Image (cartoon, rainbow over all chains, first blue to last red; front, side):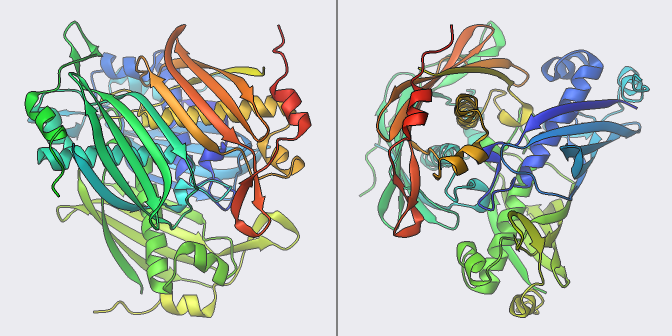
Length: 143
Length: 143
Length: 143
Length: 143
């Protein structure tokens, strides 16, 4: 399955009066990782892949996180992201966020491939993931 | 000119490790106030007024703020918003944010009425504000 | 068990280019609801209850959400929050976010009562929840 | 005077239903740049320099921005930051954010060096900037 790793930094504006990251910011971080992984796999950025595959996005059906150790502003963290399952119109992703090699947070996402609803442009409906995209999501990671 | 006042609360997730609001959050607060003022004046919500007047939005050309006293999580604040100038395709707004009647922050905005560019859907261009909207923006406040 | 309901509005700045709320913003909304519920039950605001009970906060050990229907800017939503379990040093909360009476999102939180670590002011450790707080969290809702 | 340049990317969650960045996010970006410039100049991260110079932070007294061209998710941008004035207890910073070499946003900050108020730990007061820090802020940029 597809994997992707990046590093980022916990910033002052991400942290709360307890001096640690405000937990909702982890979901911003995970979303960026998922997008970057897909951009990397598909070889184009999100604005392009939305157009090329003519869909609205891959919003979340479910998400979950376990917070094992807090992170603080100035912390450099690594996020390892992996596709762990891929169905007809949805796929599952796991994120492991580490600081200095120690696991701080685990994140889990179930995302759905959606298109604009044919009867109502304000609504969305799930749609089968293009075979070409499934192939990229389920490819073996390069050793 | 049009005015609007609302109250809100500074939340834990808005504040930084110094225990005070992270200043960028004031701009989120001001944006909500401008939208609410327009919705109130036009008698419909933003999703509707974008459609009715067939425009893309009223993004900022300039914004400015003076921070006089910090606010903290749990603080109840009032935001007084007023249109202070209205031109052909832009308008100016002032916000005064107070806590317990004492001025904490002043915000200034210059916003532009924009439509989709006829030659390129990805670009925007300024457009004259509809006369009906100008009339609402420049109306005398109810005494 | 303790319950609390409030209403809020999905704002323009909470939404993404697909026109729907950016999912991480729900966690900001849930955090505010949990804080408000505790403030209401304890009869003081968070800045005060952190001081009175001399603790650092109630960060999340786990959180989870199911997104059933998207919400859009301008949507008025209600959030019903309830304590569903209360242990020695942790408690569980559920949030139901509805729009026009229809369930849009379910959120689940496991939170830990933490104090500053006696040996290292930069670290936190879990601590038993004061009996007085447990009594409030587990009180029967007023009919 | 001190200068610092970095690059970042405009993310999906930073953008609004008009498909462009929600303007308040520029202030998050500018704040990170100011912090990074100071960290680079002082040779330590913010958590350390707050401790070493025993102060609360450098909150904003004023901030201002001019938005010349919108940016969109996926845009790679560069932010050039420079100290433009340094007084006894405050300093001024300018940011130029460009995309593909074209100026998109100009930001201006006046920041104050603050310490905890001796009479009230909840309040802050301005304090003279340490000579060593002034020397770093006003140093000639390396050619």
